[in-house]
Amino acid sequence: MDFHIEIDEQTIRKEREKARQLRKQGWWKNKIAKGLCHYCGKTVLPKELTLDHVVPVARGGRSTKGNCVPACKDCNNQKKNLLPIEWDEYLQRLGKQ
Image: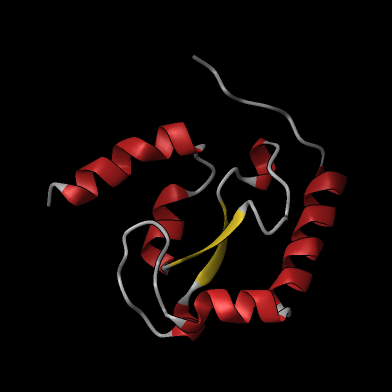
């Protein structure tokens, strides 16, 4: 099953700018205060958490509170542009280690 959607560069730039604005809000500061990765559950310093789009911008996701979660750098680097259904396989492997 191919879930690939073409998103133009202007839309990607716009959504990345929205994400930068979200990171400045109290909402985001509260989200990262616990230092907890949304995906693996690992505790890291809040400043080491990245903002990850559950549905990646490059795949049609938007920079909204409902689509943005704190992720450790390892998870964010592994996830890249995977959709939740594609990413689930990796998360299941994490749980079995």
